[in-house]
Image 1 (cartoon, rainbow, N blue to C red):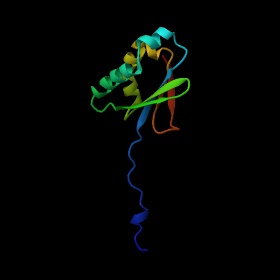
Image 2 (cartoon, rainbow, N blue to C red):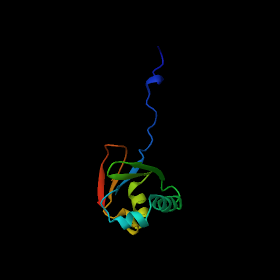
Image 3 (cartoon, rainbow, N blue to C red):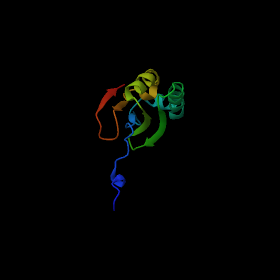
Image 4 (cartoon, rainbow, N blue to C red):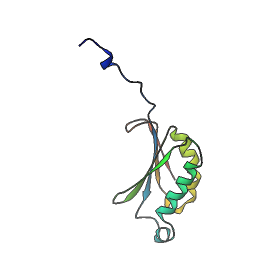
Length: 115
């Protein structure tokens, strides 16, 4: 058992930062749900994110009983949020949404923005 190289740590990769958007799935006016859809919002977000090299990626959604969560990841959550914020503020389905801007993996420092 001579080699201690087995126990050496591999270089760590910078943690990926995240944006989680919690959309209200039940209490906005009905016409907002009738006239706007999640697919359009997701397409707009993907367009903004893919239009900037190295910004990150849109990773999908999760439906919950009273909300829909959208997941985005990238090397700089603040830069990612700055890029998508105008789209979020402009799209009626995002009214009152809660946005978590996380500076690393789950449990890392984060801040919250209300739209």
